[in-house]
Image (cartoon, rainbow, N blue to C red):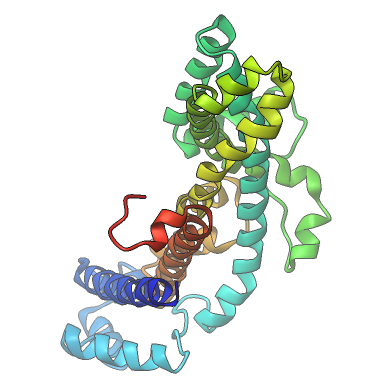
Length: 319
């Protein structure tokens, strides 16, 4: 198990390194560069040259990346060109707010998805299963930004129950003190999670209902409710739990769109603002956070799979 985790950890570090390389090169190859975004379209060539020289953009990309990597190893993510603040400070302020939104959306989605998947599986092929499955596919195919727009139109304009703008505040406590303004962002973020997990749970439950141990339990006269919740539910849950880690990057990426749609003061809104202003240090910092979140999510999924499925611990065994 130690060797397995060490191998996964080394792979995670390699992935983060490659992400920083690719992101850094792509950002520095974009036309215009940060000088145009920071100084504006009316900046003169002399002003742009002076900015590039002061920020080291006149050097080759490998030299710039090496300098960035050295600063990164010392915990220095640079400073925002437009906000005049360290990127690490901005991330420390915004990341807890994004984690609150992401965690709340994910928990809500899972709480809805697991019983819904079991409910659909026990009614497989019936009209209710067909209708709910069709609605789930429609919702799954709906982009997050479009779903957010629909929620705003329905519940902030047609029926003004909740505000269109998310909670605002400097701390997480400020945001939580305005629960009504968090409802629409949480629903928009949790909908995709609920649909995806309900499909996994439905398939897993259908497979387990066809197993021999279920037929044996029925032959012994065990009540159907006992079979479902005492035997089928735990076995179905184990295969779904391992997917939580893999879905963390997806949920985190979806929250970036939700934050921009509802003006939620998290990392996603910071990213979109930095993208409009070509604020390279902020963009690199946010991408680094997403990369680390992705590899941590994958690592968590591997560990859960390792604990749930003993075959993973055996080299060469099929999981």
